[in-house]
Each structure stands twice: as C-alpha cells, then as structure tokens.
Length: 229
Image 1 (cartoon, rainbow, N blue to C red):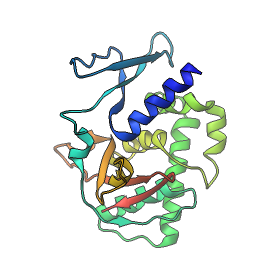
Image 2 (tube, one colour):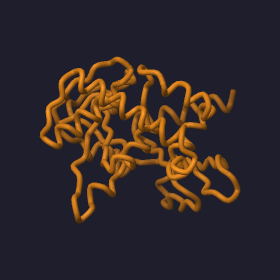
Image 3 (spheres, rainbow, N blue to C red):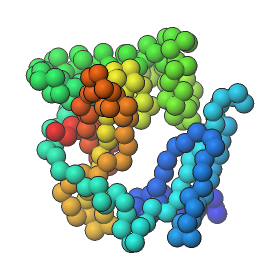
Image 4 (cartoon, rainbow, N blue to C red):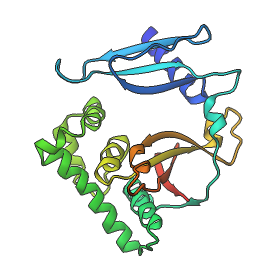
C-alpha cells in the first residue's frame, strides 16, 4: 500500500509540473540544490556490459514557476485521423509539409503504414540494426516481450509512441518535438498554447550540411497525436 501511495504521489507531481522525469545513462549527476528533492530508481534493464538506464525524478520548481510554463509556444493544429495510425500519419504529414508536398488521404495512410513497417524491419527483422536502437529496445521490453511487440506492430491499428519515435527520428534523420496542450498542464485547465515535453533526433536539426526542420507533434490526454504547424 505504501508503494502504491508513493507512486501516486510521483505521478501527481509529474502531472502538475512540480516534478520532472528524464532518462539518462549511468553515471547520473545528482540534482544539487537545497530547493530540490530527488529520488533515484535504477534498473539494470540490459546486461552487465551495456549501459544502465536510470529514471531521475526531482523538483522542477524555480521561484514557484515550472520551467515548462516558460516554454509555451503557439501553433495551429492540423487534425489527424484517429484510426490507430495517428502517430505515423502525423509524422508523414509533417515531413511532407516540410518538403512542400501535399498528400492525399490514401497516400497519407499508405506512407504511415510504411513508417510502421520500417520500425518493424529494424527492430524485429534485423539483429544487427536492432542493436543501434538500444533506447527503443529498453522502452519496448519494459512493458512486454520483444516477440509480443513484433506480433502487434504488424497490425495496421498498432498504436505508436515513444519507442517508435526513438527509432524513426534516427532512421529518417528527422528532428521531432512532442507537445502537450497548455491547458492539460495547468491545474486550472487554462491556456491555448502548447508545451514541449520531449525531443527526438535533435542532432539532425543542427547538421551543417543540410539541417532538417522539426516535425512538431501534439499529444493529447486521449492517447492521440495531431500535427502542429
């Protein structure tokens, strides 16, 4: 019961912005300040010879204002069909817009399915390539076996999330930023802007040869992704 109460307390702090969550490879430097409280949870998800991953949760308050609230940004929302492909649809739509290309509904669906199958190929069908996506493998196998994951991703209504973003940002050399609605972050439920909560493939937006424009995804509390432009 105590563990359950502790977990609920952590989740509540993450929701209201008084705590933050981040993944880092060992070693992890502590959050050093008398204003901060910290909790470390370590789990050797991988073998002894591999990197270990730590979840670090600590206070994110700074003068009573959450840092996330300083990052509110304004965009227009382009709705994406909620047919289970929403993450992949939003990605292909965003990448096409960045290239000045328009997609028909059928092209959007087909390209979304191609992205999903591209993830399957590197994670499920190629042992050598799979090793290049260690973070994604950790995220996948925390919740289920790799075998079960590979069975599910074959379905057209497979729901994509962080594991697929980790793979596709690298595979497509595409910077991706995920946002939540401002009103879902504030306790009072107000605000019409968007707050960035995760970034993938940031390095591909900074290459000197041909930097790529980020695709901005909106994740709502209803487990759905739309596109921000």
